[in-house]
Length: 343
Ligand code: DON
Image (tube, rainbow, N blue to C red; front, side):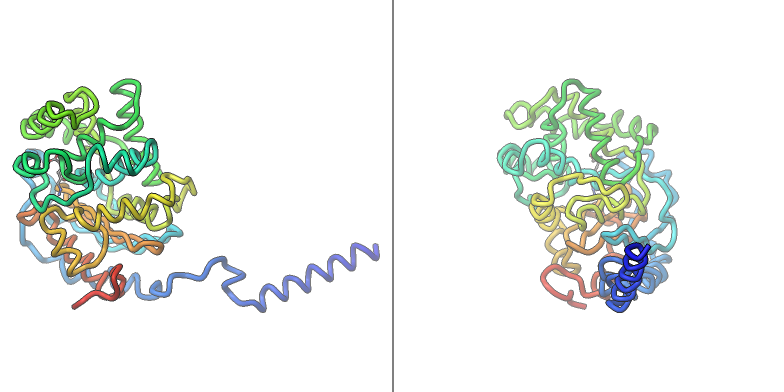
């Protein structure tokens, strides 16, 4: 009896001591210093750009013209999975090129960053995402974020069959999102039936020994990858996984090795916006990736992700409202990777 009473008073003393250490001890790690502003900056960016009508939906994939152009969502997801959002953050649109860094991550995880560097390359092309000229000039080194490098990345995924290749790609995207992602079949049909340019790219790469599976298989799996449905919230969660050292904030799964996250973010910083990558880094200062579905995700390393979705694109194929919203938020919070962003 004596012993147990003494234990209980020790327990009470310990609890009092813990509480006196303040909220950091009681509630886990200290929140991000910018957290008090997250909802305010998300709301402000949404309000500022919701009536901006510049740009137009992608039309070279015919079905993308049918996405309602006025949809707009903005979200911050922290590395511990907290979500701050405004607008249409649950609407499912096709991920398109935002998928590319995540499949590059799969190649890094299955093999190594060296394989990605040697077999695809990590040089920004300074040209459009589907440029054949870039391919002709930089035959032996593009990067995994332009179409050529992304199709090559799919071909590098270690798999026993086309179905297995697809399963691995899909599982990896789902792991980054922290929940199952599925293909928007109508987008796939629309894109695959008009994929003459990408088929040309796949065949050229194969001819040069820079594609590592059957070209039509790589094209099909790549096109399915681009047709995966995501919401802005999903993109935020995928970016938050990168911000969190490769660990998904919801499932706690280590999706890619933490030590390779900086290499992936470096490619996103230099090539994530294609021929606008320099302008983007100059004005927003964050590694990011865009897609012609209208999605963009940007990563504040070690802290959080900012994602947005709106279908109207500029000439480079980047969502006008999304890029403006993310750039404003990055500027307001002063989170550019080289220091607080310019105004
Ligand atoms: O291969 C394509 O052209 C599309 N599936 C993806 C292009 C894309 O998203 C470019 N991003 N801004």
